[in-house]
Image 1 (cartoon, one colour):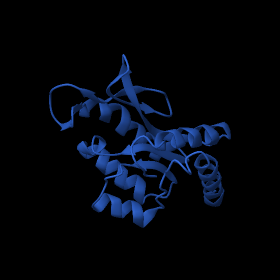
Image 2 (cartoon, helix red, strand yellow):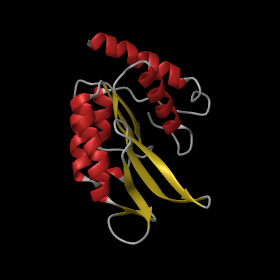
Image 3 (cartoon, one colour):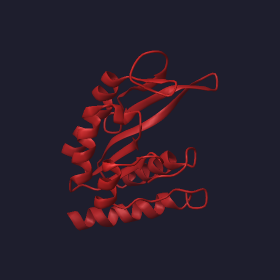
Image 4 (cartoon, helix red, strand yellow):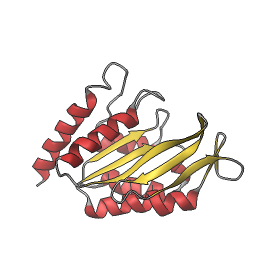
Length: 173
């Protein structure tokens, strides 16, 4: 999926995850959550969907690598997020990756696992940054379908995507 910032891509992913998990589908991977203090965004956390472990992806502050005002915390992201994706590739029926964007792509290990996931056999539900381009976008387009999330379709997409993924999972069994 892709769409403008704030349109509801992560909400769609979360709802699809909830529907499929409630139906007994083993879903693994990562969700990225905004972290706010006093109403101000201070960074982003990554959550492992299998075990609930979380860690920082990026926070406001000094240091490298950077994306805008955020410092990407590569070691913590790789320890939690990249590990969660490897675990999902190994043991889950469906892999979730929210999102493939500039912060995540600062990690060489993330780029490696994303290519394995995209080229793999398991269904993937992911969010790609609206400005993603280049080789990785071409791989996504080659191996899958990109759904544009808009204000008009975001409320119906979770049920539609969940139904489509359930059919795909039945076909693979």
